[in-house]
Each structure stands twice: as structure tokens, then as C-alpha cells.
Length: 117
Image 1 (tube, helix red, strand yellow):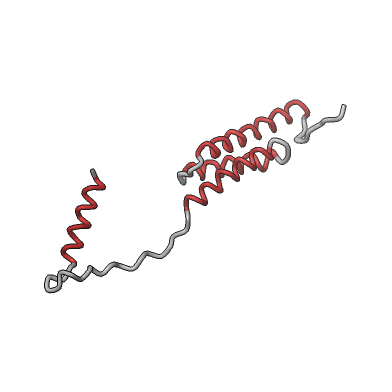
Image 2 (spheres, helix red, strand yellow):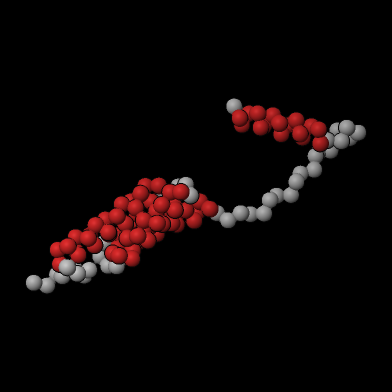
């Protein structure tokens, strides 16, 4: 309904802008606005980056990559990414990074993996 009202208002404005002396001339159009930065693409990039950082953070640098993945996922969701599933997955992986870090610290008393016997 709103779209219809806006469309009718535009048609009314176009009719008013025409010169009554010469009905055959087209109304002058405003110049196109300057191209804006693609905010959606930035949010999509944040979603993908949070997923990748969360995934890599499960193996190395849990303390650094986990919170970074969480922050990037929250920013992507706040900016209305077109990939909300990937942003949520990055958020979950960032939280999993911190859980793995807590388990490593409590079991081994260190922040490193110990695969040797």
C-alpha cells in the first residue's frame, strides 16, 4: 500500500513539473546520486570472516580468534547481512573456541594442545 502511495505521488510530481505551454516535453530529471559503498557486501564479508576465524580458532590462537569471530559475527548480524546463517555459525564457532580454551586450561593447565603422551 505504501509503495502505491509513493508511486502515485511521483506521478503527480511529474505532471506538475511539465511545462503547461509545451506538454510534449519531458520533465527534467535530477542527476543520479553518487554511488554509495556496498554496505551489504561488507556485512557479508564480516559473516564469512567470522566463520573462517572461528573455524581456524578451534585449532590455534583460541584466545585471540574466538572473541574476534564473535565480534565480527555480531557486527554482520547488526548490519543485516544476506548470510545470517554463516554469521550465526561464526558466532557459535567463536563461542566454541572459548569453550575449547577453557577445557584446555582446566585439563592441562596450559593454553596449548598436548598430543604427545
